[in-house]
Length: 89
Image (cartoon, rainbow, N blue to C red; front, side, top):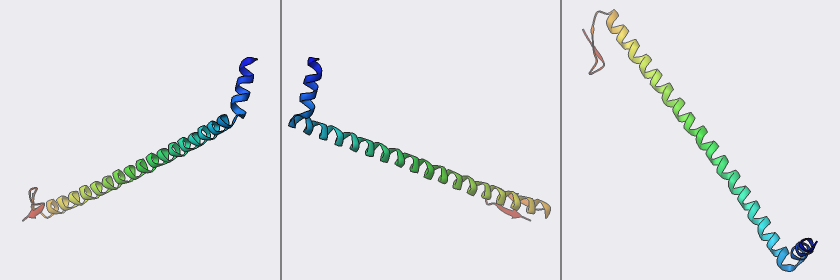
């Protein structure tokens, strides 16, 4: 029981109490930093996924627009110019 007495004296001495406060504050700061870092990553991932979805939607709309212009040109008997994206009659 020599170890228990030493721990008891260390925890209840002024230095032990000060050390406990410093360690406790350090743990709290580390937890807050860890939580903030995690939330930042989650928010950034959500923003990135949103940008990808927006770009995919824009690309799909552009492809649909091109397909419609091509189809209208072919229905009128024109020749679609791929370089300019115009219908040559």
